[in-house]
Image 1: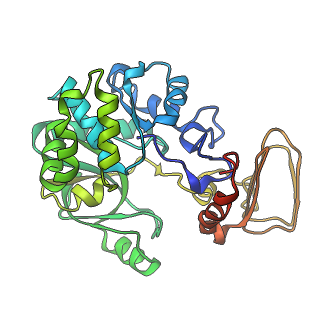
Image 2 (image 1 turned 90 degrees about the vertical axis):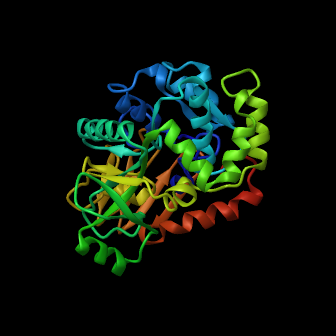
Image 3 (image 1 turned 135 degrees about the vertical axis):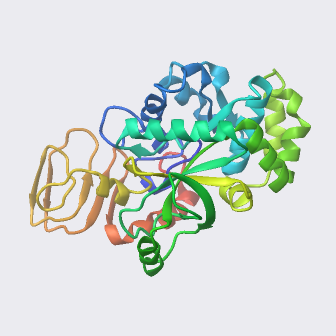
Length: 347
């Protein structure tokens, strides 16, 4: 899944070049390139499908040259994850109806990729043996309020899901950590194509019906106009809310492979190596009385900072963000304020 705009990473991430296509981690590779290479040892290149906004089709093909154009599924408009997954499932139904799907965001960070692949493989084997919708849950290391949680119904590597919980307040997150049977919801799913189609038909009949009505068009020259018609009428709904919270055959795989959704500048700060004063800074920098700050600049500028504490500073060629780490959530409001006066360059 590669259709988001990564608004919380503004000003680096913009509508015309969003987060998944950027080298935010400073590794020389974009998030989507990392994701492809993470799966490549266990999934052949010809078995990848990338669902993205139509505006990003060429970016996907440039960054993933191993893929053929027909492997990029273009949404005419974003409708959240349930229609996105339904699109991929109906394409697979037309091509490989007995296939197993692994659904993953294109912009997450995984530290231990070997462990990740082992866990994904075990989920695939589990899903292939039964009618099951499997999600990945991450064993929490702290009472984080930025993630949704999954409550397990029993002990085991793969167990039934008791409930899904929205992002909690700190006290609730602490109680989840103490209880020991709550996992972070990583938004990574494994199921057979047949199982997810059956679940969509039962729990989201409106979405399923729109796709099923045009099912003969998938993997044919008629697919694009069919998809445009479907998405123009499709509701916007997540797979979690629309299917997983309602289905009885949902399981969770308890994992610990070093996962981070890298959803905000704050999460990048937590993930990054820091100097002795807790700063994440460029190579060419000189700091005075500066602590616990993230400073990211374009190019090889010399950065000099004096008396800055707990701040995010992001400099791009045409925009500059200076924001207290505690006020990072205000970036969303900034974008709303900029949008009416934007000419397509800054947002």
